[in-house]
Length: 149
Image 1 (cartoon, rainbow, N blue to C red):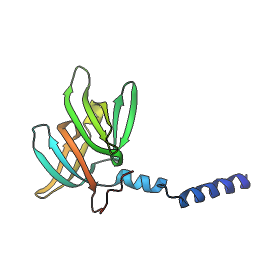
Image 2 (image 1 turned 135 degrees about the vertical axis):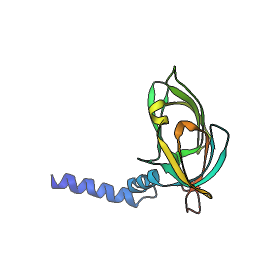
Image 3 (image 1 turned 90 degrees about the vertical axis):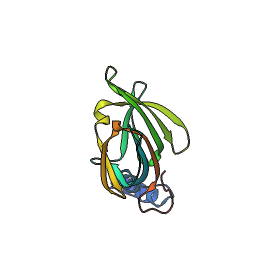
């Protein structure tokens, strides 16, 4: 048993010395705050810093086909969200990944009711996800380069 635990510990240590992101770094990025440009459902554009979900990690939960997917903010360049369709119980959305690829997804009502918020030059702001029509991620708040993976 000790040999197995020792081997597992060595694998973790060696893996953490490599150039890839560690689980701790990814965890921190999923709770990090962002500088964003947000356009609400009325067409009002606002620049925000310290932008994040009010609770939980900054991961968008959406449907793609029959699958439920989780997309971390660190992998998103922008999100465009259509109007909520009550009969279908979701909003159509287009997610543009950091790589430039676009993906059509649906945001369910429950996810769309989650609050996001941040700071503006005129004070704090909070908004429900489904009240956003476009969200563009610029960089991590207080970060020099864009370090999203």
